[in-house]
Length: 165
Image (cartoon, helix red, strand yellow):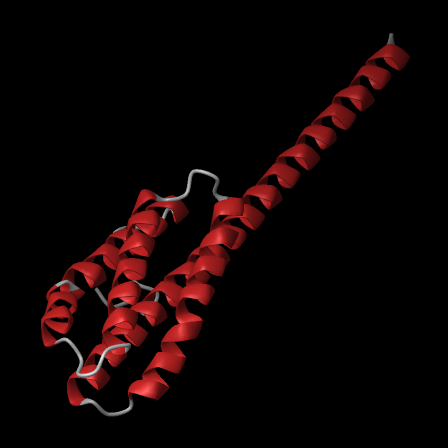
């Protein structure tokens, strides 16, 4: 009976140790997923903001009619970086955030409008005004995307990494 009790105790200890190992592996896997999500979301957020900034910079250059070529060069890389970061996030999060998709469409629409305007001389001020009218909405859409990303990561609303609200 003592031998059987000792075997049962060892079996129970092995089972408990295996359960602990499985729990640790699951925790490590969950932590790795959060890190991966954070990296993907950070890349997407950065690329999207840089895309929008490049568009606003081109808007100002077109209005001033100075530095247009440099701004166009900077803008050219932006949709590629944004699309790449979006594609990476889609691989990690198959149910891609609706706000990221909406923001991407909005950015691409602005890109097309600005490219068409930059190709004409003189620059169509009505087209530039139409783009400028939507700039705040574009930034707002990016803020919605950021909020959805924070929620997906379990970060409280209004909490920023730098501690500011």
